[in-house]
Image (cartoon, rainbow, N blue to C red):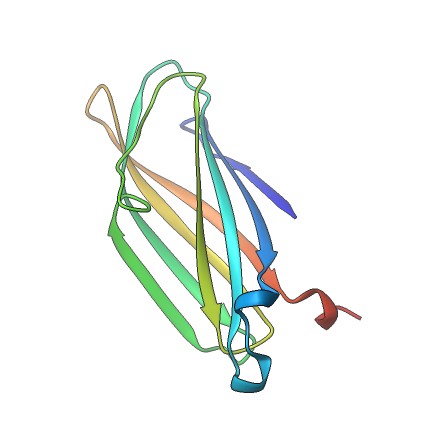
Length: 129
């Protein structure tokens, strides 16, 4: 499933999610998901991803917040017209949930940008009927 959002600073965020059956243990309320994020710089100046903030909510409304520098240990510089893609994962206690959040970026002009990431679903395929 793909999600896209383009903000006023012309940064496009696309997210694809996948249920990881191999790493899940439903009988122990452990549901693993991966998500692949592409961050495309559609503007005419470079930007660096400084930090991330995620809000992860499962089907029982349990909320996890994750914040930190960069993504997967990197603070990438994204040139105009270029895309940075990374893959990460999330573990939920329920078969479904949502993630949303934001990236804090700094342009080559020194302007700090908050790039919102609209909610996207994490759902075990068998749970949609």
